[in-house]
Amino acid sequence: MGADLLTQETDREKYVIDFFGITIFRLIWLGASDEDVEGDWRWVATGERVSMNASYWQPGQPDFVDVHDYLCLAGSIKYLWWDASNSPTGYFLCETATIY
Image 1 (cartoon, rainbow, N blue to C red):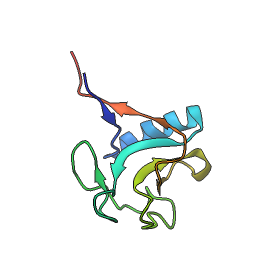
Image 2 (cartoon, rainbow, N blue to C red):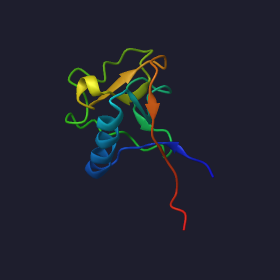
Image 3 (tube, rainbow, N blue to C red):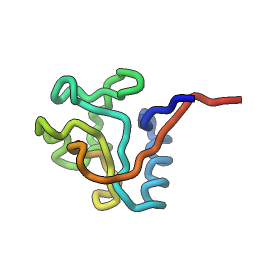
Image 4 (cartoon, one colour):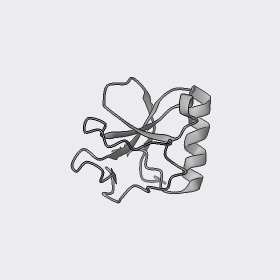
């Protein structure tokens, strides 16, 4: 059974992600990147574009720094999205297809 880093495509998913963030109060990696084309944020699992909705992103983010290619959120910035290099240590949430 495969799994991917979590994609946040709805406000409801944002609520769930925030809950886990509050519980562990750490950096959490999400499954999006602009590694292929700087500024073109895509969910890795689906290839869909990431929302540039300003309410999801920390002010000033994404900052379009070439080495900041991965999407994460952290308790220190109220669980808003920010782009980072792949070096910070953090947790991750994964999702998989529903299994009955």
